[in-house]
Image 1 (cartoon, helix red, strand yellow):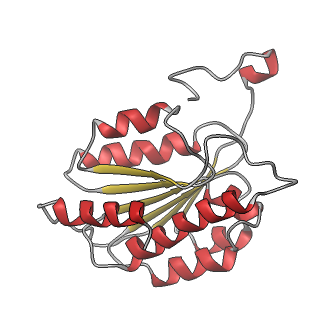
Image 2 (cartoon, helix red, strand yellow):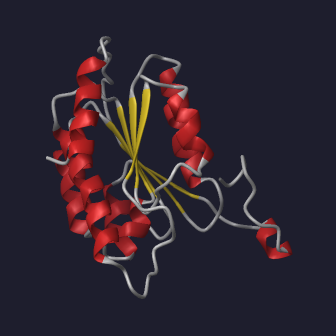
Length: 195
């Protein structure tokens, strides 16, 4: 097992309280509009207010430049994050083996958490739909993860262009629709808002 993954397994054992959801469902946040990751992070924050534990795996994202990485450190031990990407954008026309390997480690961790014996209540696979569209991870693998997840774990999948099979397997689907965006006015990503 990867050294980093075993660190996360130790984290599961460190948490003392064990609260479980009666029913764990599947949520999808997709669409071209802003707010998919923000909605998922908000769900984790809300759950932490009830002493429920969330684990976030960010696909295609790496490096601690995102504000959520620092913020989540303040929410420990109830919220934990693992970045399964590298600290720069993936070139969709030339996906490197390093990108594939990093994201596949995230998938292995997601499979272990979703079906394993731990006390995680919410598992968020941030930007997983983009990883599916880039064919780094196969849609069938996520469908299998959904089929074999524990019944008491909430699974949240984010990212634009969610495949139809994922939408069909979900219990809740929200599409973020872009109506207007300040990027069109050449306003770049802002610290604390987009990153």
